[in-house]
Image (cartoon, rainbow over the protein chains, first blue to last red):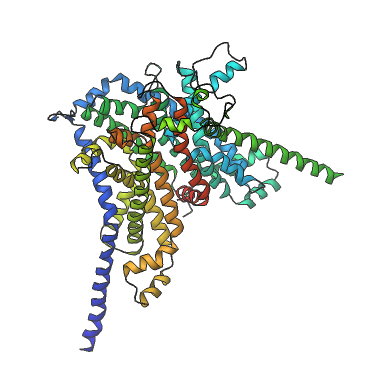
Length: 306
Length: 285
């Protein structure tokens, strides 16, 4: 009798405790609902639509992998993808070339450092669309800043339209993106620099290591995860680039700056080939997921440490 | 002697540092300042290259007035942007505080599955699922509505903000909760009265990111809002800059860009430490 009560009391409190835990499901339910309706279902639909001929109006028809076969022959898509990768490589190098020195510059607390850091970071909080509109004005041949200023200073014989040919247009975009993003990358790199123990650097100084040797042997290896994170953020962001090429260049000159997302946008929302656009999206998605897997591998905890 | 030399070296280093800092700051701030100053030129002058950037023929707000005359006007788009951003902030804070609390304090079936599901959406670019989102919104009767856009923006914010809030709740010692429970607090009072004040910094951080994200988003708004009266500022200004309302009025474009930039800059300057906190949280984990 006594043994029975002793056994059932904890059992009952365990049931009520586990019932209380179920309440947690109610708390997370709204979030799960949002993600299901506006992410998981659309994701499944993308996969399904990519197997269909899906016009905006009228019936859609199952066509198997025909859309994917069509992608193989879509040289304009491959050109867009090629351009996207080219842009990604160049802009990532440019961002790091600016952001790394800035991160070293603001890493240690010295007089006015916070002020400089804030100044460098300001363009990062402005949206890509605002920044693109701003620069489309600065780059305008008649009413803008760069061409008229170069002309007034006697650097060019006439006002040069920077957006009319590929090279100046491309490098103008690179300049704009570096201006906008460098501050962001700088902060991420700064957190990595600050996490390096100071005594390690001091010990290396005592051992007679020069600044360059210290950078290579201590800073870079210890920053691996931060570097990987900044790199992935920059690469993923650049592969999905759209705003600046749409707003400043409209994909021009001569469709040379159409990015992958821009091409998908054109197919889906200008030509209204929704099924084909979905198939293109699946290709882009596969690329980004592969990138995320590389990221997880690069960001793994160092061996031997937790 | 040696001391004087090291003093000199220190001064030289400091001089070099500050001149680098000032030049770099000017480069980063110049485009913003240039634009804001130029908007106060009279329309006639705003059409000329901005040399010098400040108004030389008198101060004027003409550019802001013309901007309001295009299409449905600046004010309508600004209202749309404000509505979308504020609603995104309120809804994403509500949903992620609840979810963060749930994930942090309860053990229920599929808890880890749901958490990983929400976080993993960050791997998938929303650009690739825009067409189906369009169709889903149509099915729900939210096609071409600002509410529909808000739903999309909230979903995009959730992985980051739920991650932030779960960590914030995890950092609150359980003893505090147990003490409150002894005093007879139920789950909801506990969350609102006891926990919320303790995770407040996290709430400010996710609210700030939600506002900036919604205020600045372009592609989804461009695709999903087909009616001009529903345009947000970035879409409206791009339509204006593309010459959709006739010859491009660069003075008006700059006025619009200023309206788009200034709230972001003010919010960032006021809440800078929360912003950096959010970045750090993302960077360290």
